[in-house]
Length: 236
Ligand SMILES: NC(=O)c1ccc[n+]([C@@H]2O[C@H](COP(=O)([O-])OP(=O)(O)OC[C@H]3O[C@@H](n4cnc5c(N)ncnc54)[C@H](OP(=O)(O)O)[C@@H]3O)[C@@H](O)[C@H]2O)c1
Image (cartoon, rainbow, N blue to C red; front, side, top):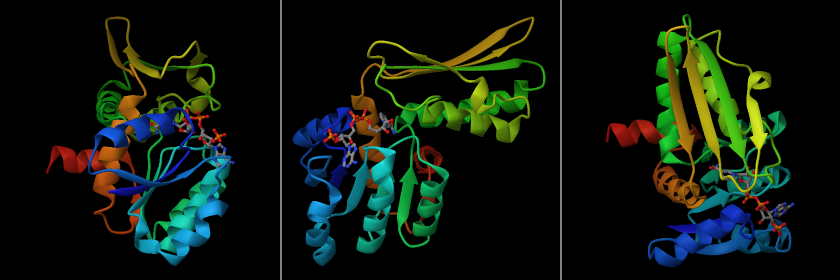
């Protein structure tokens, strides 16, 4: 798989680059960052659209609009790992997804994809008898709060239970270099169920992103999430 990597000089960019160095089936054909922006390589790839298979974005939400437009013009799939996307960016993503496959994943950990399903089931069964808590802890450099993953967990639960927390009710903690911990608790006077995911290292997000990207390049145009990847992984 030949990938253009946006955000190559960042924390996630480094993880993806080191994975590519040990994976003979993964080639990073071009890198985008502040010093080497999209504008520098746009012309080259627009005139040779078959020089890459997918655009993977772990940059900053200010770049994502232009990257979507570029993927759309090249008619290539795009995996958006960048978080903090605005409503107008999401609107652009929806528009372009009628033409190209786009996967938006605020968290590319495969275990987090499963966590979404578990919390949905728990909210559906326990939502009327238990109080639901949602806490996220991340490193001090993280720009958005609550995290994209916490928002997405809350949204998933709200579909199944009206008492699920709103974004304002998420507890966000910024501490040291924590890669990301998400905890959902269901508490009654009689018991407590805790579903927690702790990332030990950022490499898991890179590994999951590559797994999801390999799936995405085979998909028809559409807007996908990690839950779509999970569905086929659990029912191959
Ligand atoms: N989906 C997931 O599982 C997951 C996991 C971790 C992080 N994330 C998200 O991924 C994004 C990146 O995270 P990170 O921790 O790697 O951030 P980071 O270390 O700050 O890296 C950001 C990258 O984006 C580039 N960039 C920023 N503004 C740019 C611009 N205007 N034009 C071109 N490139 C630009 C930076 O280039 P320079 O270095 O040249 O400035 C750098 O390469 C964030 O939104 C984060 O929340 C998602």
